[in-house]
Image (cartoon, rainbow, N blue to C red):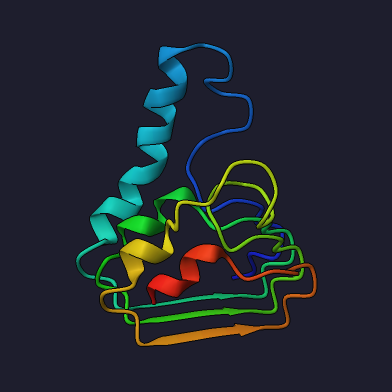
Amino acid sequence: LSLKGLTSLSLGKAGEGEGEGEGEGENEEEDDMPWRCLGHNLRSLVLRKLPKLVNLPKGICYLTALESLRIVDCEGLESLSNAGKREGEGEQNDGLPWRCLGHNLRSLVLRKLPKLVNLPKGICYL
């Protein structure tokens, strides 16, 4: 199974809920649902060889039981925040998802991420 064309780890479809007020919030809640279900059980997550993935999914902050996170060979990844912006651009990063992951995360591997130029401010919570 190859997921090299994967651009997002959320369930939302491009364009849905945009500019519709209530629809936008509902769509965001749906995107978070699989992450919420995994949150208390998932101990290890590997994101590997996903060249079109640009940002971490917003729902990753629900993975509070995560002990090991490996992000390897994701050539398009520009940010380790879930805000959709590179670190230092635009709004101040509040530390999510790192604040939520900080209690249990014991291993973090970041390798072959050529577009990643800064570590997130929130990494201090680990």
